Image (cartoon, one colour):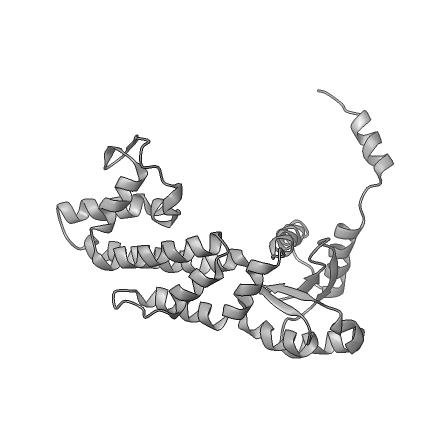
Length: 264
């Protein structure tokens, strides 16, 4: 897989490498940038890839590493969903009322992943398999299907709320406090990962930077690759990407395009 790095403020692509292993990344930055230049780098937003941490500390000794908040939410979101699937599959082998619970957990999985504060407690709607209910009442009923599901849901909501409010103290408490025995192995693994990245998570609450721009660039790059049906030579692929992002129409050209509109 290729590697790219961008300016976090402007979103401009600085360069693209043909490989993303540590040796290739280190050689590139050491050859093209002096230590003085690299010491000027203040922040480096990344996803939760642990392999980048050691490289960043070596190449940019003064930079603050920032974990992207989207990946934090995605991590605990997947853990909660896996817990739901585990409970749901246990009910699938039963009959009668348990099968109804199975269908409810399968149908309304998105409600379990929503923040509890976003669910209405007064607005009634018709829900298949439930009838006229509020969102919070549906969640309360589904949580009674299994004690482990309820424990994981409550921890999930605490984590989501602390990340949403950028409350590092509340998040640290959730991670440091003893984990209840009913917490699933998926959530335990996620908590372990969050503890490992805790200093970088704190930076994500302080600084406004994230990986949104680079994720958008990646989507465009994948579209270019599909349109071209792939590239045999990487340097041609790299040049095509840089041309696409750096060559932009002038203001005069945009005005001419807007003034000449054909209507069929």
